[in-house]
Each structure stands twice: as C-alpha cells, then as structure tokens.
Image (cartoon, rainbow, N blue to C red; front, side, top):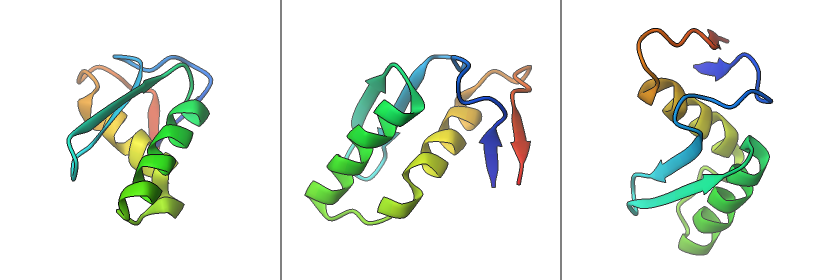
Length: 75
C-alpha cells in the first residue's frame, strides 16, 4: 500500500476522489474534508470499507498522479 508523504501539501490534480462502484466524484480542500464526504457516501450507500477511506483516497491520488510525482511512499 502507498500513502502520501505530506497530507498538508496539495497533490497533483488536487484533493479529488471517484468512488468507482457508484461513479460519484468528490472534491475538497483537504484530505480530511474529502474523507468525510466519501465516508458519508459509503455509509449512505452501504458500500463498506468505511475504515479505509483515507487509504483508498491516497492510493487513487497516487495512481492518477503524473509519473514524475514522488510525493508518496510505500508502507
């Protein structure tokens, strides 16, 4: 699994996430604000993985980042 080195730094393409199971896209001004939105969506739709919201967001941001982005680490 991967995570961002600095969650206080604006990532490439900003703080955004797409819930692939519903196609719903979220944007926010921080990881915490984005995680709150995604968590509410998952709970309301019975999607599960409520305990993995921040990890899922970070992984997707890293996957969609340009190849030269090095602001992540394995853990």
